[in-house]
Figure 1 (cartoon, rainbow, N blue to C red):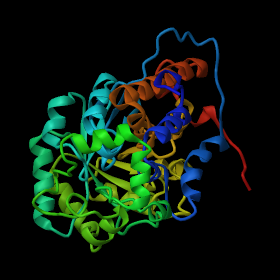
Figure 2 (tube, rainbow, N blue to C red):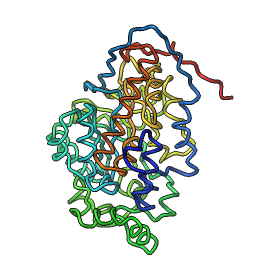
Figure 3 (cartoon, one colour):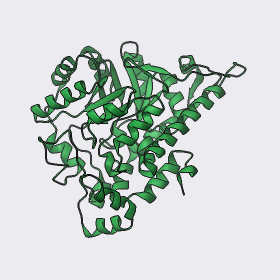
Figure 4 (cartoon, rainbow, N blue to C red):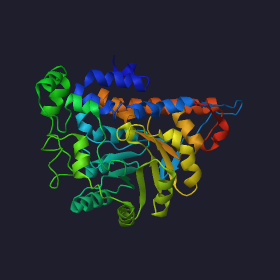
Length: 385
């Protein structure tokens, strides 16, 4: 299988599985506990049907959106994800270039492997910095100021990682950051010599935003679950979020909102956006899917704040369904991470290009020329039980 054979999400996943050592692949692919929520995130879209109109004159369509003050050429952006140089040696650089090509936003994690300063020189499209609230307040201040000085337009505080999820695949494979050499992992790395060559001959793996503050994850191998549980501040509360929002004094979002009550509080503290997200099913297994929860959150706050649907997106029709419910845009991590692992920048460009083509075709088949023509009138929900 090669990149030109990748026509959809599952094709990229298969190619990524071939290219990556087992522990690295399963870190992307896995989720918490029994992975019920992970599966449901995508399955939820199948419980809803689209009702198209015809004879609408759809020769030219406009799929641009404005979200949190940012104009995006397509209604999907690359959600922030950690450790990208583990998946491909270009890491976040590759994703930034691909996002720029398609005129969409790129989210950079606090646990990124390329600096916000470098990303700002690569990407001239909108950029989001994803903020983890650490126990070390000096580190928190440094993260915020670096994002500000690098001219990132949006700050997103992740609020659903107050402790690490039970990612049992990582326990089975022994995944850590940086990778720990064991007999089993050595065999897996040896079976993927190109990955190993690139990882060990390119510049040393690092999480540069943490350098000077934290050794875990950079010089000291640690699982992501342990990092969340030990390095992040479990006392974080609404007052902390409100103070961070005020200190940033710009476009500010909470990432990981799942309840109406929390969505309303996000409005109250001054947020301009929320990501309805369960962290890709990687935290609380049994949590509701973002798409299933989207309508009641949009009904409660959609006229006051930009609501983004994040999680489970694999098709253009998924995007149109979420926007029909009332989301301003969609975002995802795995939708480009498999592609990054499969072929670097070219892979991410193909994944975004495939998705863009699907959205354009599906808009025409729905009989719309702009996304604001979507509404719940063109949806019908199945009765599950």
